[in-house]
Amino acid sequence: MSGNDYFTNVTRPGILTAVGVFSIIVASTALLVDLGSLGFANAVSHFAVRRTPAATINSAPPPLTPAHAEYVAPNGLSASQRQIVIAGLSQVRPLSIARQKQVDGLLADAGQQVIGLSPDNLTTDRVVAYVTDVRNFPNASGGPPDDLFILGSGRLQVSDENAVFFAQNSPSGIRSHGGSFTDSSGTHLASEQIAAVVDRVQSLCGQGQAMNSAQINALQSELELPSQTLITPSASVAEAAAQVQSVRALGDGTIAVTTGNSSMSFGPRGRMVPGVIAISQTIWTPPMVAKRDATLLVLDTFLSFVAAGFLLACGVMVLRNSPISRWMHLGYAIGKIPLVALSCFAIYQVAMALNARSPDAESTANAWMMIVGMPGIVYPIVLLIVMNLRSVREFLGTPTVARIF
Image (cartoon, rainbow, N blue to C red; front, side, top):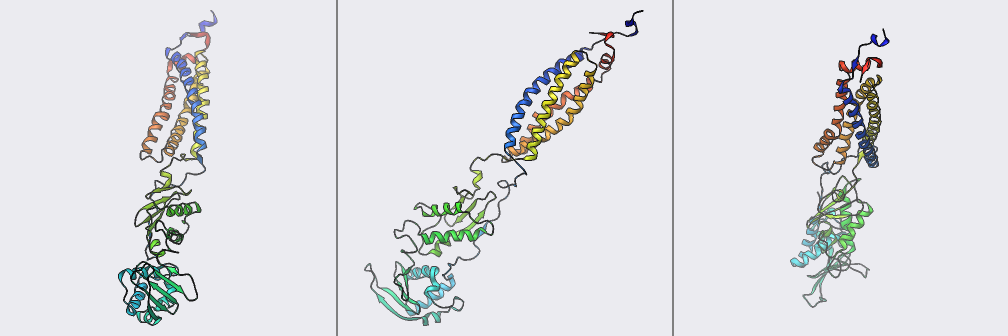
């Protein structure tokens, strides 16, 4: 009796041949795909940050910082105080509506210099007593004579076109129109008005949210343009600054300024756009991916590449009828399943980050996960089933001498 008579002949199942061929095909394809994925993962890692950046654009911006109170210039008087002064001057000599407006503008800017009385104790009678004399003064343009009030602090000259205050022993006057407070051509704001507007914006920004130097320069440059629409040139600095109605500090560092005429947003680097909008919404910026997610994606693609190489070896071994090929395939299948779970998580997180600005970010991330990640679990499950078939176990468990190929 020969030695072969001790063994029962076993024929190799056709499905085992199919597994060997299919393993080589799947592995070869996966090696090429994973090689490209490694390049993609490396590119994503360049966008990675150590922690997920705080939501800025998609989150609700901070509430408006409105101008709750009336704007009063450092040396100016409030609206109610100005009315008291105008009423007192009008008792000494009646003032036309046009001249009252000129006086009002001057008092808004420098009322405390014009009227040397305590603003807290200001009354009409005290203003009347503060006027020591009133005269007519020839108008430079040949119109009705100017009203010249002699005050305890100096001379106040009022016409329909402007109001000028000359402090005692001072040759230069403080004007409500022209000269030091508005550009003499009337085409654009004077430097004093621009400075007051910037100060007004800064005060409304709130603590820790003030404009940086680039934004201040951008705002000043905008206000210097004759074509600017933010601020209407006014008869006084205070009136110009008072046109700033609200300021909003947006999440990306943009400062949005709203006036009675229009609104404009100033980005952290000085870029300007009309309206109230975060500057980062108007320009492309690289997507931000969390460092953890980028690392997981790189790790997943590397492990997948290694697993594909191992599967290629499995396919070769099963075609050579090696008994160990069954355990190699089972080991691959068991290890690949958690790797697929890691792939799905990494792909979902990265897809969410790359599409963070899209309202369909979650749907897109789920689609990426289902299309790219989930199919990887199919073949491992097939291997777990096939490699535990009785015919496969018997063939690979039988000594080579008893096999029929």
